[in-house]
Figure 1: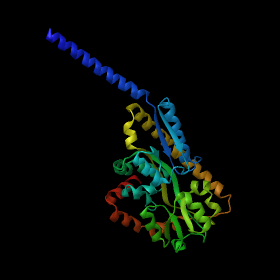
Figure 2: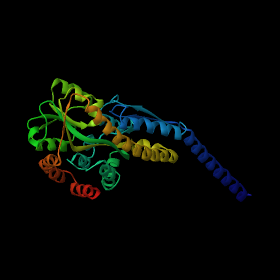
Figure 3: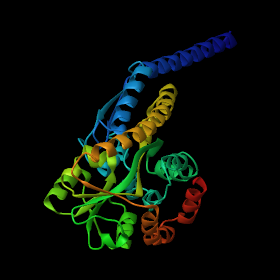
Figure 4: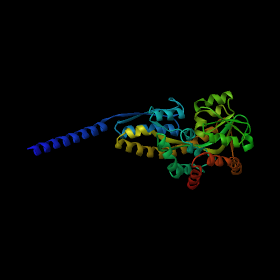
Length: 336
């Protein structure tokens, strides 16, 4: 009799456990997760469009169980502030430009090396290959999971003083750069003074002469109307501006497995689309800039080589100041 009672109790306990597990699984499937995607660019350029596309597709594919609200144009702060809020659990998604990441992971200064990538495809291969394989774990240690990398295009120099064709033309210029110390070293090698100004404040700084010029992509130069406050544009392609598409690791781990899969697969799909869109837009922005009053200087191969040689010492700075710098430069060279 006791054995029968014990077996009956065991059946009841197991059934209760299975029922509770089923209830928990059902609750997870029914739960609606809300998230914020904040970024600093206009919603009209490739990055901004990709953020909206990602949010829309995830909402659709999850049947509304993951609802992402997008806040573009620095509404919730600059890139560094947004990323810090991700670490605190206040914002879930961001795609900060790589120049702000050294504040969190010094190894990401690699993206600020001069002439690091020969072209857009080379940048994609490096970020989604050997370079990304090394950098992504460092970002994860900071609570930031990399979902992919997005294309911002190559950077060019604008200024109000004179046309720039040689490194000597940069002497004495006050150039706005991001927070990356390696960019400061890069412009110091050209004889210019790097000045750190928030992206949202840059147009006013150019208007008021706080700085003489800046470096940026064609997308930002056009959509932010920097050409209105600058006389000269040099198509230097001296640096690359990429974006790390991030999700807060704490939020990611709170998602059930099926939503994680939707996030991962959608991120991959949107990232491929974003790169192609960015390339198409870059050509269109250059066409439109040619119709403005800004003077455009196109460097010859020899002139570009002079800039490369003038800034070569920045690679030595990177190797000596960043842990694992040699390994990262080697990975970069392998991806070329």
